[in-house]
Length: 165
Image 1: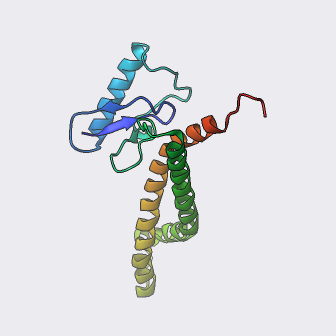
Image 2: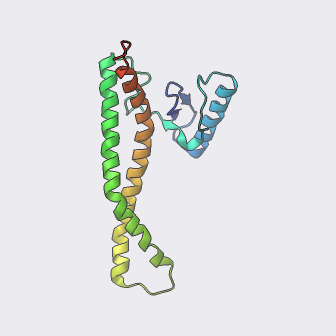
């Protein structure tokens, strides 16, 4: 059963019948979100609007920062770990981005009426591995970034002081 949350409102968990995260599941979650909003149960407005692509899948494998009832220190440690993972993914993404864009620019060779050399085609085939790696990293980064929003809020809360220091 896929479960979704919102980067802006991570305490809202939407549970959707089914076994996988699919476009249809996200549409159902969107319907539930609209119902919650109409009933005034959402708790906050979504200033930038919302789309099914922005849902964050709540996975049992990843630390669930909202439902965690561990002490404050464990919650902060998890938040830092999530942000550290985001930083690592961003670094890897930036490393592979230039290579992926170079490969992407060569794809036009396939659609040209001009003949391509065996070497060009071989390089392009090797480049597809780079594109696949980059695309996978990009998806993981997007998912981690959405989860990191909740981690950032936890750290912001933990860093606030009542003394004005």
